[in-house]
Image (cartoon, rainbow, N blue to C red; front, side):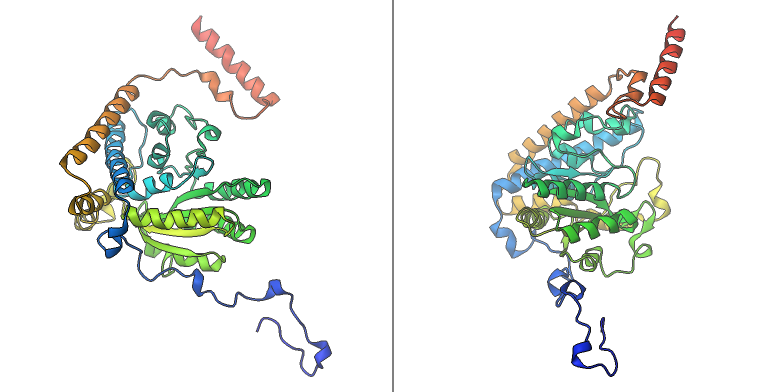
Length: 377
């Protein structure tokens, strides 16, 4: 019992707790299913929208080619680093496509593909990883928060934006993306706690790709699943196959709709796998086997959807080729523009730091300007 009667006290001395003290009577509706939700390869797939699934297929093919091109640019020295999402394209693209124009996307450093799928220029999406600017785009214009390198710090920001929008009466939903490693950070706890208490219109999408760099999930948490963490905060948790783009679309659409209608936040765990190394600086062979990677290739998101669509007669060879040609055109354009040396101005170091520059910044800017002029002379 959370509140006990005083021994020997009469009825008039009973302690009656206010409603806020009472535990939730039934937590069962918040618990995720025991197994990840799937659509592709099941009877539910017959009810899919063929046109929508063909669009997803084209985006998946483009996303796979985008990953390959970005990785190649890293090897050529055009990018300082690239965190690949090969194998995770379904979650990346679904996260972008379920949002409406007024909604906000809060990506991590690995989610450049989600930003591109939302409409961001691929070159602008890669500017941070090139080392030119902290953010190569206007977040307000695109409704995409800056790519977040520190783990999980974007989650409280998403809650703040969503809560502020609700106070203003705006129908805005924030979708925040994070990896399994980020769920071990304090920011994850703080964001979910505030979101649930405020009933903020936020959707938290955890891409559980098996490893936080080299640390497997079993060494991070003893929870039955990451989705089970939702019940501790008072929000529903959903467990979904992160390589099944049809299942992701359904689960994310439902969560976004729930948030927009005032139903509060949802925590979604997408079970997927990072096919490639953490970044080009990582040696994945030190902590996982080739056989493990090969086993996951059979559950590749592009192949899963292609087999479903071709098997149902919703996609033919010309459709497959059309998607590949469009992806190749995107890659060629990206390659050409990224191979051009960027024009940089060292004085940009002092731009967009504060709305009004501090005296200290003005002094530093003047010092750098004098050094640059001296070098020019």
